[in-house]
Image (cartoon, each protein chain N blue to C red):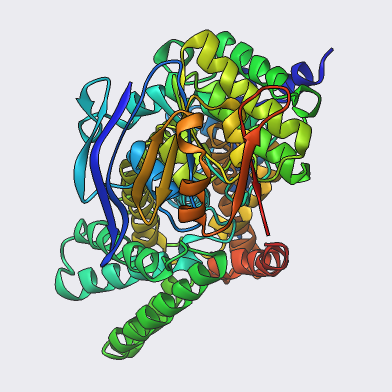
Amino acid sequence: MTSSQQANQNRVTLRRTIITLLVLVAALVIVVGGAALLGSERLPVSNSLCALTTLGTRQCGLTSDHFDILFQIRLPRILLAAAVGGSLATAGASYQALLRNPLAEPYLLGVSNGAAVGTMLALLFFGSLEWSRPLMAFAGALVATLAVYRLARGRVGATPERLILAGVIVTTFLSSIIVFVTTMMDATRIRSFTFWLLGDLSGANTGLLPVPIAVAVVGAIILTLNARSLNLLMLGERDAFDLGVEVGRVRMAVFLIASLLVGSSVAASGSVGYVGLVVPHLTRLSVGSDNRISIPSATLGGALFVIIADTIARTVIAPRELPVGAITALIGAPLFIYLLKRV
Amino acid sequence: MLEARNLTIKYGHRTAVDNVSLSLEPGVLTAVIGPNGAGKSTLLRSLNGSLIPNSGTILLNDKPLGKLSRRTVAKQITVVAQEAELRFPITVFEYVLGGRFVWANSTTWGWESERDLQVAEGVLEETELHELSGRMMNELSGGERQRAVLARALATEAPILLLDEPTANLDLSHQAALLGLVRERCNSRKSSALIITHDINLAAQFADVILLLRAGQVVKAGTTQQVLVPDLLREVFSVDVLVDAHPISGVPRVTPVH
Protein backbone atom coordinates (compact mmCIF):
# COMPACT_ATOMS: atom_id res chain seq x y z
CA MET A 1 0.00 0.00 0.00
CA THR A 2 1.42 3.38 -0.96
CA SER A 3 1.72 6.09 1.59
CA SER A 4 -0.92 8.22 -0.09
CA GLN A 5 -3.40 5.34 0.00
CA GLN A 6 -2.67 5.09 3.68
CA ALA A 7 -3.22 8.81 4.14
CA ASN A 8 -6.44 8.40 2.24
CA GLN A 9 -7.64 5.72 4.62
CA ASN A 10 -7.01 7.87 7.67
CA ARG A 11 -9.01 10.65 6.11
CA VAL A 12 -12.37 11.69 7.47
CA THR A 13 -15.10 10.23 5.27
CA LEU A 14 -18.87 10.44 5.22
CA ARG A 15 -19.07 6.88 6.54
CA ARG A 16 -16.74 7.57 9.46
CA THR A 17 -18.63 10.75 10.29
CA ILE A 18 -21.97 8.96 10.36
CA ILE A 19 -20.64 6.16 12.58
CA THR A 20 -19.07 8.68 14.99
CA LEU A 21 -22.27 10.68 15.21
CA LEU A 22 -24.39 7.56 15.77
CA VAL A 23 -22.12 6.54 18.65
CA LEU A 24 -22.46 10.02 20.15
CA VAL A 25 -26.25 9.97 19.75
CA ALA A 26 -26.37 6.60 21.53
CA ALA A 27 -24.21 8.00 24.33
CA LEU A 28 -26.51 11.01 24.55
CA VAL A 29 -29.61 8.81 24.91
CA ILE A 30 -27.94 6.81 27.71
CA VAL A 31 -26.75 9.96 29.52
CA VAL A 32 -30.18 11.60 29.26
CA GLY A 33 -31.74 8.48 30.81
CA GLY A 34 -29.13 8.33 33.55
CA ALA A 35 -29.38 12.03 34.38
CA ALA A 36 -33.16 11.77 34.60
CA LEU A 37 -32.83 9.11 37.29
CA LEU A 38 -30.32 11.06 39.38
CA GLY A 39 -31.40 13.80 41.75
CA SER A 40 -32.36 14.66 45.28
CA GLU A 41 -35.59 12.68 44.95
CA ARG A 42 -34.94 8.97 44.35
CA LEU A 43 -37.10 7.60 41.52
CA PRO A 44 -37.86 3.90 40.96
CA VAL A 45 -35.46 2.91 38.17
CA SER A 46 -37.39 0.43 36.04
CA ASN A 47 -40.71 2.32 36.20
CA SER A 48 -38.96 5.59 35.30
CA LEU A 49 -37.09 4.02 32.39
CA CYS A 50 -40.34 2.49 31.18
CA ALA A 51 -42.04 5.90 31.31
CA LEU A 52 -39.08 7.55 29.56
CA THR A 53 -39.08 5.04 26.70
CA THR A 54 -42.76 5.74 26.09
CA LEU A 55 -41.87 9.46 26.12
CA GLY A 56 -44.37 10.04 28.93
CA THR A 57 -47.38 8.60 27.15
CA ARG A 58 -47.70 5.88 29.82
CA GLN A 59 -47.22 6.29 33.53
CA CYS A 60 -45.67 2.78 34.00
CA GLY A 61 -46.69 2.57 37.67
CA LEU A 62 -45.01 5.83 38.74
CA THR A 63 -46.82 7.93 41.33
CA SER A 64 -48.04 11.19 39.86
CA ASP A 65 -45.50 13.10 41.98
CA HIS A 66 -42.67 11.03 40.57
CA PHE A 67 -44.10 11.31 37.09
CA ASP A 68 -44.18 15.10 37.41
CA ILE A 69 -40.63 15.25 38.77
CA LEU A 70 -39.48 13.21 35.79
CA PHE A 71 -41.36 15.01 33.03
CA GLN A 72 -42.02 18.49 34.42
CA ILE A 73 -38.74 19.12 36.22
CA ARG A 74 -35.90 16.84 35.22
CA LEU A 75 -36.47 16.16 31.53
CA PRO A 76 -37.01 19.84 30.51
CA ARG A 77 -33.88 20.74 32.43
CA ILE A 78 -31.88 17.97 30.76
CA LEU A 79 -33.16 18.98 27.34
CA LEU A 80 -32.23 22.60 28.03
CA ALA A 81 -28.78 21.48 29.21
CA ALA A 82 -28.38 19.54 25.96
CA ALA A 83 -29.50 22.52 23.86
CA VAL A 84 -27.25 24.96 25.72
CA GLY A 85 -24.23 22.64 25.61
CA GLY A 86 -24.77 21.81 21.96
CA SER A 87 -25.20 25.48 21.03
CA LEU A 88 -22.16 26.75 22.91
CA ALA A 89 -19.88 23.96 21.70
CA THR A 90 -21.01 24.42 18.09
CA ALA A 91 -20.51 28.17 18.32
CA GLY A 92 -17.06 27.64 19.86
CA ALA A 93 -15.98 25.15 17.19
CA SER A 94 -17.02 27.46 14.36
CA TYR A 95 -15.46 30.59 15.92
CA GLN A 96 -12.23 28.61 16.28
CA ALA A 97 -12.22 27.57 12.64
CA LEU A 98 -13.22 30.98 11.32
CA LEU A 99 -10.81 32.96 13.49
CA ARG A 100 -8.05 30.32 13.16
CA ASN A 101 -7.73 30.31 16.89
CA PRO A 102 -8.18 27.32 19.21
CA LEU A 103 -8.80 29.74 22.11
CA ALA A 104 -11.84 31.45 20.60
CA GLU A 105 -14.86 30.77 22.78
CA PRO A 106 -18.19 32.63 23.21
CA TYR A 107 -17.66 33.27 26.94
CA LEU A 108 -14.03 34.41 26.60
CA LEU A 109 -14.75 36.57 23.56
CA GLY A 110 -17.44 38.48 25.44
CA VAL A 111 -20.20 37.16 23.18
CA SER A 112 -21.97 35.53 26.13
CA ASN A 113 -21.79 38.80 28.05
CA GLY A 114 -23.22 40.61 25.04
CA ALA A 115 -26.13 38.19 25.07
CA ALA A 116 -26.48 38.64 28.84
CA VAL A 117 -26.72 42.43 28.48
CA GLY A 118 -29.33 41.92 25.75
CA THR A 119 -31.35 39.61 27.98
CA MET A 120 -31.16 42.06 30.90
CA LEU A 121 -32.30 44.96 28.76
CA ALA A 122 -35.18 42.82 27.52
CA LEU A 123 -36.14 42.01 31.13
CA LEU A 124 -35.95 45.67 32.12
CA PHE A 125 -37.82 47.17 29.21
CA PHE A 126 -40.01 44.41 27.81
CA GLY A 127 -40.33 42.27 30.95
CA SER A 128 -43.72 40.88 30.01
CA LEU A 129 -42.67 39.75 26.54
CA GLU A 130 -40.92 36.40 26.91
CA TRP A 131 -39.89 36.40 23.26
CA SER A 132 -37.93 39.62 23.60
CA ARG A 133 -35.28 37.84 25.68
CA PRO A 134 -33.80 35.46 23.07
CA LEU A 135 -34.15 38.16 20.41
CA MET A 136 -32.34 40.82 22.43
CA ALA A 137 -29.77 38.22 23.51
CA PHE A 138 -29.11 37.45 19.85
CA ALA A 139 -28.70 41.14 19.07
CA GLY A 140 -26.35 41.59 22.03
CA ALA A 141 -24.27 38.56 21.01
CA LEU A 142 -23.99 39.81 17.43
CA VAL A 143 -22.92 43.31 18.47
CA ALA A 144 -20.29 41.87 20.85
CA THR A 145 -19.02 39.49 18.13
CA LEU A 146 -18.59 42.26 15.59
CA ALA A 147 -16.95 44.53 18.19
CA VAL A 148 -14.40 41.87 19.15
CA TYR A 149 -13.72 41.05 15.50
CA ARG A 150 -13.09 44.71 14.65
CA LEU A 151 -10.89 45.26 17.70
CA ALA A 152 -8.85 42.12 17.10
CA ARG A 153 -8.15 42.82 13.45
CA GLY A 154 -4.83 44.61 13.21
CA ARG A 155 -2.85 45.39 10.10
CA VAL A 156 -1.50 41.86 10.03
CA GLY A 157 -4.82 40.17 10.79
CA ALA A 158 -6.04 38.87 14.10
CA THR A 159 -3.34 37.12 16.12
CA PRO A 160 -4.54 34.77 18.89
CA GLU A 161 -3.22 37.12 21.58
CA ARG A 162 -4.92 40.15 20.09
CA LEU A 163 -8.20 38.31 19.84
CA ILE A 164 -8.12 37.23 23.48
CA LEU A 165 -7.22 40.77 24.57
CA ALA A 166 -10.07 42.18 22.52
CA GLY A 167 -12.33 39.59 24.18
CA VAL A 168 -11.16 40.69 27.64
CA ILE A 169 -11.84 44.34 26.82
CA VAL A 170 -15.33 43.66 25.51
CA THR A 171 -16.09 41.27 28.39
CA THR A 172 -15.06 43.73 31.11
CA PHE A 173 -16.87 46.59 29.43
CA LEU A 174 -20.07 44.56 29.22
CA SER A 175 -19.57 43.30 32.79
CA SER A 176 -19.61 46.86 34.04
CA ILE A 177 -22.89 47.43 32.22
CA ILE A 178 -24.25 44.26 33.83
CA VAL A 179 -23.17 45.45 37.28
CA PHE A 180 -24.73 48.83 36.61
CA VAL A 181 -28.06 47.29 35.64
CA THR A 182 -27.97 44.79 38.53
CA THR A 183 -27.56 47.48 41.16
CA MET A 184 -30.79 49.04 39.98
CA MET A 185 -32.65 45.86 40.90
CA ASP A 186 -34.16 44.96 44.25
CA ALA A 187 -32.30 42.62 46.62
CA THR A 188 -34.25 39.41 45.98
CA ARG A 189 -33.88 39.68 42.26
CA ILE A 190 -30.15 40.34 42.54
CA ARG A 191 -29.54 36.89 44.03
CA SER A 192 -31.42 34.97 41.36
CA PHE A 193 -29.79 37.20 38.80
CA THR A 194 -26.24 36.51 39.97
CA PHE A 195 -27.06 32.83 39.85
CA TRP A 196 -28.37 33.18 36.31
CA LEU A 197 -25.27 35.09 35.21
CA LEU A 198 -23.06 32.20 36.33
CA GLY A 199 -25.07 29.82 34.24
CA ASP A 200 -28.22 28.35 35.71
CA LEU A 201 -30.48 25.76 34.15
CA SER A 202 -33.18 25.74 36.81
CA GLY A 203 -35.53 27.92 34.77
CA ALA A 204 -36.01 25.22 32.16
CA ASN A 205 -39.71 24.55 32.31
CA THR A 206 -41.05 27.45 30.32
CA GLY A 207 -42.92 27.75 27.06
CA LEU A 208 -39.67 28.93 25.48
CA LEU A 209 -37.87 25.58 25.86
CA PRO A 210 -38.37 24.64 22.18
CA VAL A 211 -36.49 27.80 21.10
CA PRO A 212 -32.97 26.84 22.23
CA ILE A 213 -33.53 23.24 21.13
CA ALA A 214 -34.63 24.24 17.63
CA VAL A 215 -31.86 26.85 17.33
CA ALA A 216 -29.22 24.30 18.39
CA VAL A 217 -30.35 21.73 15.83
CA VAL A 218 -30.80 24.14 12.92
CA GLY A 219 -27.65 26.10 13.74
CA ALA A 220 -25.51 22.97 13.94
CA ILE A 221 -26.85 21.76 10.59
CA ILE A 222 -26.20 25.07 8.81
CA LEU A 223 -22.68 25.37 10.21
CA THR A 224 -21.92 21.75 9.32
CA LEU A 225 -23.03 22.47 5.74
CA ASN A 226 -20.39 25.22 5.68
CA ALA A 227 -17.76 22.91 7.16
CA ARG A 228 -15.71 22.49 3.99
CA SER A 229 -15.41 26.25 3.60
CA LEU A 230 -14.43 26.46 7.25
CA ASN A 231 -11.76 23.80 6.68
CA LEU A 232 -10.10 26.13 4.18
CA LEU A 233 -10.66 29.21 6.36
CA MET A 234 -8.75 27.38 9.08
CA LEU A 235 -5.73 27.56 6.76
CA GLY A 236 -6.10 31.32 6.33
CA GLU A 237 -8.57 33.73 4.76
CA ARG A 238 -6.38 34.42 1.76
CA ASP A 239 -5.88 30.73 0.97
CA ALA A 240 -9.61 30.14 1.32
CA PHE A 241 -10.36 33.06 -1.01
CA ASP A 242 -7.88 31.80 -3.62
CA LEU A 243 -9.41 28.33 -3.50
CA GLY A 244 -12.91 29.60 -4.19
CA VAL A 245 -14.52 30.22 -0.78
CA GLU A 246 -16.89 33.19 -0.59
CA VAL A 247 -15.05 34.36 2.52
CA GLY A 248 -17.28 37.33 3.35
CA ARG A 249 -20.47 35.31 3.03
CA VAL A 250 -19.21 32.39 5.15
CA ARG A 251 -17.87 34.77 7.80
CA MET A 252 -21.20 36.58 8.05
CA ALA A 253 -23.08 33.26 8.20
CA VAL A 254 -20.88 32.03 11.05
CA PHE A 255 -21.19 35.30 12.97
CA LEU A 256 -24.98 35.29 12.59
CA ILE A 257 -25.56 31.63 13.39
CA ALA A 258 -23.06 31.54 16.26
CA SER A 259 -24.63 34.68 17.76
CA LEU A 260 -28.04 33.07 17.45
CA LEU A 261 -26.76 29.93 19.19
CA VAL A 262 -25.12 31.89 22.01
CA GLY A 263 -28.06 34.29 22.29
CA SER A 264 -30.69 31.60 22.63
CA SER A 265 -28.71 29.65 25.20
CA VAL A 266 -27.75 32.67 27.28
CA ALA A 267 -31.33 33.93 27.32
CA ALA A 268 -32.42 30.56 28.67
CA SER A 269 -29.59 29.78 31.07
CA GLY A 270 -27.14 32.66 31.53
CA SER A 271 -23.46 32.42 30.65
CA VAL A 272 -22.25 28.87 30.95
CA GLY A 273 -18.53 29.34 30.39
CA TYR A 274 -15.80 27.31 28.70
CA VAL A 275 -18.13 24.79 27.03
CA GLY A 276 -17.12 26.18 23.65
CA LEU A 277 -13.46 25.71 24.58
CA VAL A 278 -13.40 22.33 26.29
CA VAL A 279 -15.68 20.37 23.97
CA PRO A 280 -14.28 21.35 20.54
CA HIS A 281 -10.78 20.76 21.89
CA LEU A 282 -11.67 17.25 23.01
CA THR A 283 -13.55 16.45 19.80
CA ARG A 284 -10.65 17.65 17.64
CA LEU A 285 -8.31 15.48 19.69
CA SER A 286 -10.44 12.41 19.15
CA VAL A 287 -11.93 12.84 15.64
CA GLY A 288 -9.51 15.29 14.00
CA SER A 289 -9.89 18.89 12.83
CA ASP A 290 -12.00 18.30 9.71
CA ASN A 291 -15.03 20.46 10.51
CA ARG A 292 -17.40 18.11 8.70
CA ILE A 293 -16.95 15.69 11.57
CA SER A 294 -15.70 17.97 14.36
CA ILE A 295 -18.59 20.48 14.29
CA PRO A 296 -21.48 17.98 14.61
CA SER A 297 -19.39 15.95 17.10
CA ALA A 298 -18.89 19.12 19.14
CA THR A 299 -22.67 19.70 19.10
CA LEU A 300 -23.39 16.28 20.54
CA GLY A 301 -20.34 16.36 22.81
CA GLY A 302 -21.40 19.75 24.16
CA ALA A 303 -24.85 18.39 24.95
CA LEU A 304 -23.27 15.45 26.81
CA PHE A 305 -20.83 17.72 28.66
CA VAL A 306 -23.42 20.16 29.98
CA ILE A 307 -25.92 17.44 30.93
CA ILE A 308 -23.21 15.74 32.98
CA ALA A 309 -21.99 19.04 34.49
CA ASP A 310 -25.53 20.02 35.43
CA THR A 311 -26.25 16.63 36.94
CA ILE A 312 -23.17 17.13 39.12
CA ALA A 313 -24.27 20.69 39.91
CA ARG A 314 -27.67 19.60 41.17
CA THR A 315 -26.59 16.45 43.04
CA VAL A 316 -23.24 17.07 44.83
CA ILE A 317 -24.69 19.26 47.55
CA ALA A 318 -28.35 18.22 47.15
CA PRO A 319 -30.92 19.45 47.96
CA ARG A 320 -29.02 22.69 47.32
CA GLU A 321 -27.63 23.42 43.87
CA LEU A 322 -24.51 24.89 42.30
CA PRO A 323 -24.74 26.98 39.14
CA VAL A 324 -23.72 24.75 36.24
CA GLY A 325 -21.34 27.47 35.02
CA ALA A 326 -19.24 26.94 38.14
CA ILE A 327 -18.72 23.27 37.21
CA THR A 328 -17.88 23.97 33.54
CA ALA A 329 -15.44 26.73 34.51
CA LEU A 330 -13.80 24.44 37.05
CA ILE A 331 -12.98 22.06 34.19
CA GLY A 332 -12.48 24.69 31.50
CA ALA A 333 -10.15 27.21 33.09
CA PRO A 334 -7.23 24.77 33.63
CA LEU A 335 -7.63 23.52 30.05
CA PHE A 336 -7.52 27.11 28.80
CA ILE A 337 -4.21 27.66 30.59
CA TYR A 338 -2.86 24.47 29.05
CA LEU A 339 -3.97 25.54 25.55
CA LEU A 340 -2.63 29.06 26.00
CA LYS A 341 0.80 27.62 26.71
CA ARG A 342 0.69 25.62 23.50
CA VAL A 343 -0.48 28.25 21.00
CA MET B 1 -7.33 33.57 -21.10
CA LEU B 2 -6.65 36.30 -18.58
CA GLU B 3 -6.23 39.84 -19.74
CA ALA B 4 -5.43 42.95 -17.72
CA ARG B 5 -5.81 46.41 -19.21
CA ASN B 6 -4.34 49.59 -17.75
CA LEU B 7 -4.29 48.39 -14.15
CA THR B 8 -3.50 50.96 -11.50
CA ILE B 9 -3.41 50.00 -7.84
CA LYS B 10 -2.71 52.44 -5.02
CA TYR B 11 -2.00 51.99 -1.32
CA GLY B 12 -3.07 55.35 0.05
CA HIS B 13 -1.08 57.86 -1.97
CA ARG B 14 1.58 55.40 -3.08
CA THR B 15 1.02 53.90 -6.52
CA ALA B 16 2.07 50.24 -6.39
CA VAL B 17 1.00 49.28 -9.90
CA ASP B 18 0.93 51.98 -12.55
CA ASN B 19 -1.02 51.50 -15.78
CA VAL B 20 0.06 47.90 -16.39
CA SER B 21 -1.43 45.81 -19.19
CA LEU B 22 -0.70 42.16 -19.80
CA SER B 23 -2.32 39.06 -21.16
CA LEU B 24 -1.80 35.43 -20.20
CA GLU B 25 -2.31 33.27 -23.27
CA PRO B 26 -2.79 29.49 -23.27
CA GLY B 27 0.52 27.63 -23.34
CA VAL B 28 2.58 30.70 -22.47
CA LEU B 29 4.74 30.98 -19.36
CA THR B 30 5.31 34.60 -18.34
CA ALA B 31 7.94 35.54 -15.77
CA VAL B 32 7.73 38.81 -13.87
CA ILE B 33 11.04 40.21 -12.68
CA GLY B 34 11.99 43.47 -11.05
CA PRO B 35 13.55 44.90 -7.89
CA ASN B 36 11.90 44.66 -4.47
CA GLY B 37 8.88 46.92 -4.20
CA ALA B 38 8.30 47.00 -7.95
CA GLY B 39 4.67 45.96 -7.45
CA LYS B 40 5.04 42.36 -8.64
CA SER B 41 3.03 40.70 -5.84
CA THR B 42 0.42 43.46 -5.86
CA LEU B 43 -0.08 42.89 -9.56
CA LEU B 44 -0.43 39.14 -9.04
CA ARG B 45 -2.90 39.61 -6.17
CA SER B 46 -5.14 41.74 -8.35
CA LEU B 47 -5.23 39.16 -11.12
CA ASN B 48 -7.36 36.70 -9.14
CA GLY B 49 -9.54 39.36 -7.58
CA SER B 50 -8.08 39.46 -4.07
CA LEU B 51 -7.07 43.08 -4.63
CA ILE B 52 -9.46 45.39 -6.40
CA PRO B 53 -7.56 47.76 -8.72
CA ASN B 54 -8.25 51.48 -8.48
CA SER B 55 -8.64 51.61 -12.23
CA GLY B 56 -8.32 49.33 -15.20
CA THR B 57 -10.09 46.12 -16.19
CA ILE B 58 -9.32 42.43 -15.79
CA LEU B 59 -11.04 40.04 -18.16
CA LEU B 60 -11.23 36.30 -17.58
CA ASN B 61 -12.25 34.64 -20.85
CA ASP B 62 -13.64 38.04 -21.95
CA LYS B 63 -15.78 38.50 -18.82
CA PRO B 64 -15.01 41.12 -16.17
CA LEU B 65 -13.38 39.36 -13.19
CA GLY B 66 -15.40 41.27 -10.60
CA LYS B 67 -18.69 39.98 -12.02
CA LEU B 68 -17.79 36.31 -11.64
CA SER B 69 -18.43 34.18 -8.54
CA ARG B 70 -15.48 33.04 -6.44
CA ARG B 71 -16.11 29.48 -7.50
CA THR B 72 -16.01 30.33 -11.22
CA VAL B 73 -12.81 32.30 -10.80
CA ALA B 74 -11.14 29.61 -8.67
CA LYS B 75 -11.94 26.95 -11.27
CA GLN B 76 -9.98 29.03 -13.80
CA ILE B 77 -7.25 30.71 -11.75
CA THR B 78 -5.09 29.18 -9.04
CA VAL B 79 -2.53 30.95 -6.88
CA VAL B 80 0.69 29.66 -5.35
CA ALA B 81 1.71 32.06 -2.61
CA GLN B 82 3.84 31.84 0.49
CA GLU B 83 1.99 29.47 2.75
CA ALA B 84 0.17 30.88 5.77
CA GLU B 85 1.11 29.71 9.25
CA LEU B 86 -0.94 26.64 10.17
CA ARG B 87 -2.62 26.57 13.56
CA PHE B 88 -4.52 23.31 13.27
CA PRO B 89 -2.99 19.92 12.43
CA ILE B 90 -3.62 18.69 8.89
CA THR B 91 -2.01 15.97 6.78
CA VAL B 92 -0.36 16.73 3.46
CA PHE B 93 -3.02 14.66 1.70
CA GLU B 94 -5.91 16.60 3.29
CA TYR B 95 -4.10 19.87 2.55
CA VAL B 96 -3.80 19.00 -1.13
CA LEU B 97 -7.43 17.85 -1.23
CA GLY B 98 -8.29 21.43 -0.24
CA GLY B 99 -7.59 22.27 -3.87
CA ARG B 100 -10.64 20.21 -4.87
CA PHE B 101 -13.03 22.49 -2.95
CA VAL B 102 -14.39 24.16 -6.08
CA TRP B 103 -15.31 20.79 -7.55
CA ALA B 104 -17.54 19.82 -4.62
CA ASN B 105 -21.05 18.98 -5.68
CA SER B 106 -24.21 17.48 -4.29
CA THR B 107 -23.76 14.00 -5.80
CA THR B 108 -21.17 13.20 -3.12
CA TRP B 109 -22.93 15.24 -0.42
CA GLY B 110 -20.08 17.72 -0.50
CA TRP B 111 -17.50 15.00 0.20
CA GLU B 112 -14.53 14.26 -2.03
CA SER B 113 -15.30 12.09 -5.04
CA GLU B 114 -13.12 9.24 -6.37
CA ARG B 115 -11.88 11.63 -9.02
CA ASP B 116 -10.88 14.20 -6.39
CA LEU B 117 -8.77 11.53 -4.68
CA GLN B 118 -7.19 10.47 -7.98
CA VAL B 119 -6.27 14.04 -8.87
CA ALA B 120 -4.76 14.56 -5.42
CA GLU B 121 -2.69 11.38 -5.71
CA GLY B 122 -1.58 12.43 -9.18
CA VAL B 123 -0.28 15.84 -8.15
CA LEU B 124 1.39 14.35 -5.07
CA GLU B 125 3.31 12.05 -7.45
CA GLU B 126 4.16 14.98 -9.72
CA THR B 127 5.52 17.06 -6.86
CA GLU B 128 7.35 14.05 -5.38
CA LEU B 129 5.37 14.27 -2.17
CA HIS B 130 3.52 10.94 -2.34
CA GLU B 131 5.84 9.43 0.25
CA LEU B 132 4.98 12.27 2.64
CA SER B 133 1.24 12.42 2.06
CA GLY B 134 0.36 10.95 5.45
CA ARG B 135 2.63 13.35 7.34
CA MET B 136 1.45 16.46 9.12
CA MET B 137 2.07 19.70 7.27
CA ASN B 138 3.95 21.22 10.21
CA GLU B 139 6.40 18.32 10.21
CA LEU B 140 7.62 19.17 6.70
CA SER B 141 10.64 21.26 5.79
CA GLY B 142 10.13 24.68 4.21
CA GLY B 143 10.82 23.33 0.75
CA GLU B 144 8.50 20.36 1.16
CA ARG B 145 5.72 22.66 2.35
CA GLN B 146 6.27 24.89 -0.65
CA ARG B 147 5.81 21.87 -2.91
CA ALA B 148 2.62 20.98 -1.03
CA VAL B 149 1.31 24.48 -1.74
CA LEU B 150 2.07 23.94 -5.43
CA ALA B 151 0.46 20.48 -5.32
CA ARG B 152 -2.72 21.97 -3.88
CA ALA B 153 -2.77 24.63 -6.59
CA LEU B 154 -2.29 22.01 -9.32
CA ALA B 155 -5.06 19.91 -7.76
CA THR B 156 -7.57 22.65 -8.64
CA GLU B 157 -6.87 21.85 -12.32
CA ALA B 158 -7.28 25.55 -13.07
CA PRO B 159 -5.75 26.42 -16.46
CA ILE B 160 -4.28 29.71 -15.26
CA LEU B 161 -1.50 29.55 -12.67
CA LEU B 162 -0.24 32.57 -10.73
CA LEU B 163 2.92 31.82 -8.74
CA ASP B 164 4.51 34.25 -6.29
CA GLU B 165 8.16 33.31 -5.77
CA PRO B 166 7.41 29.59 -5.83
CA THR B 167 11.09 28.62 -5.74
CA ALA B 168 12.10 30.79 -2.76
CA ASN B 169 12.60 27.92 -0.29
CA LEU B 170 13.63 25.22 -2.73
CA ASP B 171 16.98 23.56 -3.29
CA LEU B 172 18.62 23.59 -6.72
CA SER B 173 17.09 20.41 -8.07
CA HIS B 174 13.58 21.16 -6.81
CA GLN B 175 13.70 24.69 -8.24
CA ALA B 176 14.20 23.28 -11.69
CA ALA B 177 11.72 20.47 -11.05
CA LEU B 178 9.02 22.90 -9.98
CA LEU B 179 9.42 25.20 -12.93
CA GLY B 180 9.68 22.14 -15.17
CA LEU B 181 6.31 21.01 -13.84
CA VAL B 182 4.72 24.38 -14.59
CA ARG B 183 6.36 24.41 -18.03
CA GLU B 184 4.97 20.93 -18.69
CA ARG B 185 1.44 22.09 -17.78
CA CYS B 186 1.80 24.95 -20.25
CA ASN B 187 3.01 22.60 -22.98
CA SER B 188 0.71 19.64 -22.56
CA ARG B 189 -2.47 21.16 -21.12
CA LYS B 190 -2.13 24.60 -22.69
CA SER B 191 -2.19 26.19 -19.25
CA SER B 192 -0.96 29.74 -18.87
CA ALA B 193 1.32 30.72 -16.03
CA LEU B 194 2.64 33.89 -14.47
CA ILE B 195 5.65 33.46 -12.21
CA ILE B 196 7.18 36.11 -10.01
CA THR B 197 10.81 35.32 -9.39
CA HIS B 198 14.08 36.92 -8.38
CA ASP B 199 16.01 34.23 -10.19
CA ILE B 200 16.51 35.80 -13.62
CA ASN B 201 18.39 32.82 -14.98
CA LEU B 202 15.65 30.42 -13.99
CA ALA B 203 13.17 32.77 -15.66
CA ALA B 204 15.32 32.84 -18.80
CA GLN B 205 15.42 29.06 -18.90
CA PHE B 206 11.69 28.40 -18.55
CA ALA B 207 9.74 31.50 -19.59
CA ASP B 208 8.41 32.45 -23.02
CA VAL B 209 7.77 36.05 -22.06
CA ILE B 210 9.46 38.23 -19.47
CA LEU B 211 7.85 41.26 -17.92
CA LEU B 212 10.33 43.67 -16.37
CA LEU B 213 8.74 45.90 -13.72
CA ARG B 214 10.09 48.92 -11.88
CA ALA B 215 8.16 51.20 -9.52
CA GLY B 216 4.88 49.74 -10.69
CA GLN B 217 5.51 50.29 -14.37
CA VAL B 218 6.34 47.88 -17.16
CA VAL B 219 9.84 48.79 -18.31
CA LYS B 220 9.89 46.14 -20.98
CA ALA B 221 7.86 43.12 -21.99
CA GLY B 222 9.01 40.61 -24.54
CA THR B 223 11.02 37.47 -25.17
CA THR B 224 14.02 36.65 -23.00
CA GLN B 225 16.35 37.93 -25.73
CA GLN B 226 14.49 41.22 -25.92
CA VAL B 227 14.29 41.87 -22.18
CA LEU B 228 17.50 40.42 -20.78
CA VAL B 229 19.89 43.00 -22.21
CA PRO B 230 22.64 44.61 -20.11
CA ASP B 231 21.55 48.23 -20.49
CA LEU B 232 17.98 47.58 -19.38
CA LEU B 233 18.98 45.41 -16.42
CA ARG B 234 21.62 47.90 -15.32
CA GLU B 235 19.06 50.68 -15.42
CA VAL B 236 16.39 48.77 -13.51
CA PHE B 237 18.46 46.93 -10.89
CA SER B 238 21.23 49.60 -10.58
CA VAL B 239 23.95 47.00 -10.87
CA ASP B 240 26.39 46.17 -13.64
CA VAL B 241 25.61 42.87 -15.30
CA LEU B 242 27.24 40.58 -17.76
CA VAL B 243 24.87 38.85 -20.17
CA ASP B 244 26.16 35.90 -22.16
CA ALA B 245 24.64 32.77 -23.61
CA HIS B 246 24.07 29.67 -21.51
CA PRO B 247 26.61 27.11 -22.77
CA ILE B 248 24.02 24.35 -23.21
CA SER B 249 20.60 25.91 -23.78
CA GLY B 250 21.82 29.11 -25.37
CA VAL B 251 19.33 31.30 -23.45
CA PRO B 252 20.67 34.57 -22.02
CA ARG B 253 22.59 34.16 -18.78
CA VAL B 254 22.83 37.10 -16.39
CA THR B 255 25.71 37.56 -13.95
CA PRO B 256 26.11 40.64 -11.74
CA VAL B 257 29.53 42.26 -12.00
CA HIS B 258 31.05 43.95 -8.97
